[in-house]
Image 1 (cartoon, rainbow, N blue to C red):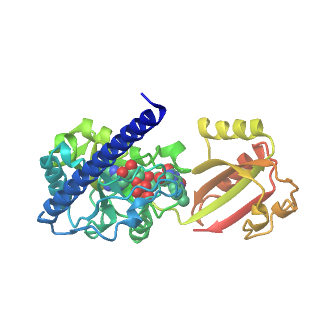
Image 2: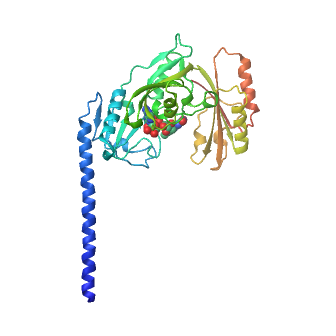
Image 3: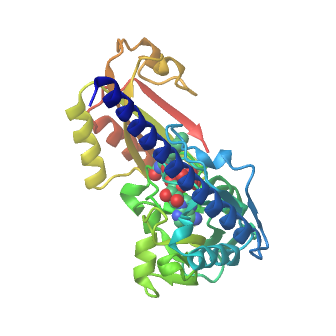
Length: 362
Ligand SMILES: Cc1cc2nc3c(=O)[nH]c(=O)nc-3n(C[C@H](O)[C@H](O)[C@H](O)COP(=O)(O)OP(=O)(O)OC[C@H]3O[C@@H](n4cnc5c(N)ncnc54)[C@H](O)[C@@H]3O)c2cc1C
């Protein structure tokens, strides 16, 4: 075979392979397009009190860190738990070829695509019809509030404070949803005493996702306990929380709030451990790490002049890593002075490399 002939043959083979690849990709694209359009028309026929949004879906495609972009096929705005149950049953009935997956989304403040799904259905939990928050304080052995899974903790605080109550366990940041934090853990400075938020829930209403049944079930420590424990901290994989019964306690009216800075990690960790494990007069304890590159310390609020004249802004940390212990003690104005003195003593007893002590009223 001549050299020219061999070259021509190779070129023809390459052309054939290329044409075949293009044909295959077109077939896949066509099949996917058919699949999506049949999914869309099937979903559009779903009877809902809320609605499915197919156009304005970009807001549900991002995570908080803006690292994961997963565009969903649609966003479900449910008005009731039944809307969620119907959608899950319908998707299950469509079978595996639809390739649709479902993700519940609260505020979308989690990372790494937890509240996202590519070409699937994102359930916008804040759309759940917010029934009036029901605070139960009279006649109940312990007060509680019934809330929607899409409710924000900040709204729960405002409503329960009207009754002189507040949830026992918090997150620091309160513009997060009940379902979002109960699917993780929900941690703040009260966790050392009461446990995380998932340890302060009496009961849940859940739409099950198991085998696409889409049942609406109540569960608690005693009733459907597997479901209860699976859903709490379950990242939305075991069911979708549509309602929750949250434990409350009397809300503090005043708080003494202190921050203690450390240069030495071991001193910081030792004091924190001592406070968390030993008996303490504090109601809130949290530790965190600060890299003082942004002049953060210069902007710390001071609402009174500390006895120790050393100010945060005078502290030359030179961009070093610092450790901060944040503690608080709740009190009433007519509290025994002795109690507050004990708190002061305990503060002094800590290995204080303290530079900033502040008081504030709640
Ligand atoms: C600024 C900021 C401050 C934070 N502060 C704290 C803090 O102090 N303490 C703390 O513990 N965490 C904190 N976090 C983390 C936060 O608690 C979690 O990321 C939480 O999941 C966010 O709630 P969300 O409503 O945004 O949930 P999303 O991010 O929307 O969802 C989180 C997960 O829960 C699932 N999910 C959402 N709703 C439901 C539902 N109703 N039923 C079942 N599954 C559901 C989602 O599918 C996803 O897997 C903070 C995050 C940010 C960005």
